[in-house]
Amino acid sequence: MSEVYQETALTPLRVASLSGYRDWSWQPSMFKHYPNFLYRYKYEENPLLRMVELCRIVTSRLNSANQPYIQLNTPSAGNLHPVELYVQIRGIKGIISGIYHVNAGNGELVLIQEVEREGVESLVGLQKRCNGFIFLLSTVAFRSEWKYGLRAFRYCYLDAGHQLGAINAALKLYGREMTILSDFDAEAVNEFMAFRGDEFICAAMYSGDMSEKSVVAPKKNLMYVAATNYSELSEQTREHIAKSEILKSDILELSCEINEEQILKRRSARFFESESMTNIQVEYFMNILSKSNHSFSCYNIVLKDGVYKAGVYLNNRCIQEGHFAATMGSMLVEQSFVKNAEIVSVFCSKYFSSNKLMQAGAFVHALYLHAEVNALGCSGIGAFYDKKLQDFLGTQEYILYVSVLGVEKKRMQRECENEKN
Image (cartoon, rainbow, N blue to C red; front, side, top):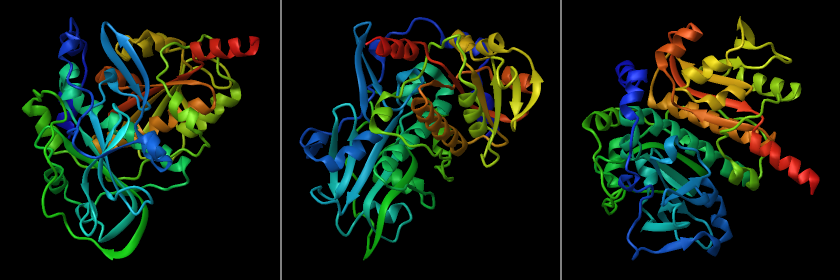
């Protein structure tokens, strides 16, 4: 996949070519919609469905330039959300056993096909019926490619990683564990789900108990429904995604107690205070980021002097002292809001793959939730000048993702107002 990394790398010239006027009335539809004649549950109809709703839920509806601006509990590059989520539910009281589409846009669960003896278990490597939930996650690359060109390949899998992190958080809130499924034929799943070349399976996982009852493969495929209102996906991106691997590795989890409000309040911080995080907060996050059990390297650039001197850290050891706030803002494609943050973390790997990108996205999603618990701001950044950042860090590893942590300005203002009241 090294050639894909180079083809999707950002340079000042490539960034300039993607800049300029964009007619947002041409934006591909952000949500897939199955026909209205299909049976569906509104989430409020059954409290048992709240867990599924929290996996992928609209948390804000605004208008921007006469266009709807919808935000979910998962972040997304450009707020384009190039993923779709499906779930098979079996053996849950009061809910028809079947394969559902999670329609976050309409706040409903759409029944595509009922299951009994048949089920997706046989397609994802399970030999028995799963009483519980089997989640299928797909990428819809054109939603992102429409704006970001070939770089969309990375954003699809980073966003998928965030979706994995959101599913895991919702399950844990309800005392459930998530098991990744990786021993299956992705092409067979794509065919059964009727994705037809513009949508691709990227991950499968389950949460439930395996029964003693056998399961058989579905006799026919699901109905075809286009994921977007139109698609002009390039053959290059389609080929890259078709050849990419599904999620093979467990996602890296962070152990913190979260509640429903924190899941719903997650936002990408865009304004940081000049005030520093507390020493306890800095040490807490630096220890998390420096753990040796990660499947990727994590370079942490501390931007402010404190319990850690400003500089670049690897494995909790300073490898270069200095104040690099302006440098980071420049290398992250002139995103100046980074300059007031506290910690910039750069996630790297010796291998570049869809699997690694999803792992990085899931890890950063957990960081978001940790930041929310600690009343801090967090933001995941997928736009950076690849070669410049590699040279700055002195590494030949592939750069997967970047996160920033700090004291968020609007959060600080909100807390001050609460104190006054």
